[in-house]
Length: 244
Image 1 (cartoon, rainbow, N blue to C red):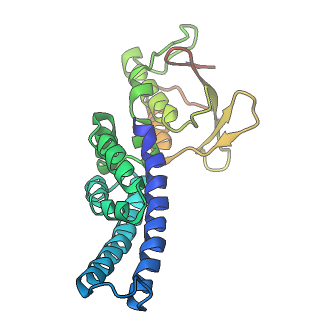
Image 2 (image 1 turned 180 degrees about the horizontal axis):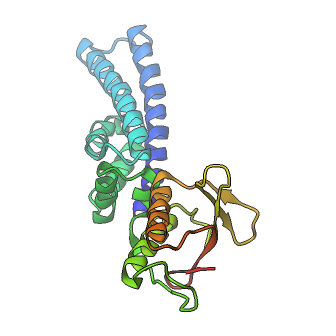
């Protein structure tokens, strides 16, 4: 359900723009006395108030849509749905449809968790991805590869690295390679993340670099100085990995 968040955000912005245009035209028409001739003042006043409400609703909806795209402002999103009903009185029934869909979306437990993850400091992409893929993580170790220290502690570090990597991969990737090389200039680790075809690369984020740095420090403390290595991860009913 959380993958519908950005779809709904786009609909909110589009509906907001429509409401601003329709409400603005109606408001201008009423203020320039282009409405129904001979209409009572109270009816004209009601039309002006309705048009102004639609414009304000559209602006509020646009703001809520932008925040929703960034997986923020869940309360603002819920609030923006109510005044949007005013547009339904101007032959624009989408306001009612978005109200129903928006309440279903914002009150969904999976969506609530996404907004809470975002509020806790996770990136928007991580919040939208959730921990479903990470929870299915299954570690696969090559017994022939020497471990630079106690196996239990090494597994914790390896799993942390793969968790950071999995949430970083594009949705279309089901396999990836992480090449680690030691820079001869300053001895820092150089990290390259590529797909299985070796045609696409992505940039590691700060969290992945931190976990790789922790592994490097662990290796140096265990007298296992890392010069070059490749981490292979793939998805097969859960994420698996192996050091090459």
